[in-house]
Image (cartoon, rainbow, N blue to C red; front, side, top):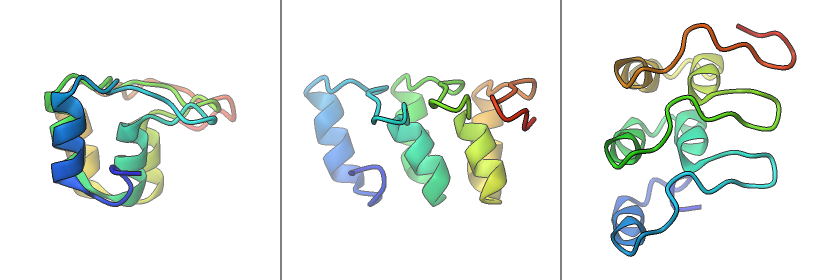
Length: 96
């Protein structure tokens, strides 16, 4: 919820107390997936700088880059690519 709401101070405090950075929802969405979906590129940068997995997979195989592309969030896309997000990842529905 903190990533979705772009609550930077909350995320920083959670990470300070060793919150799991790649914790997942029921759909296997990580905070980075959520930040990519919402276009919160500053949030995504904080998460990536703290070690979030740029190529984490949601239940359907989507990576944060797939989601940022689908939502046309250019800054998030650029940031993810700079953090080695895969251009070759394929989802279960064969989006590429």
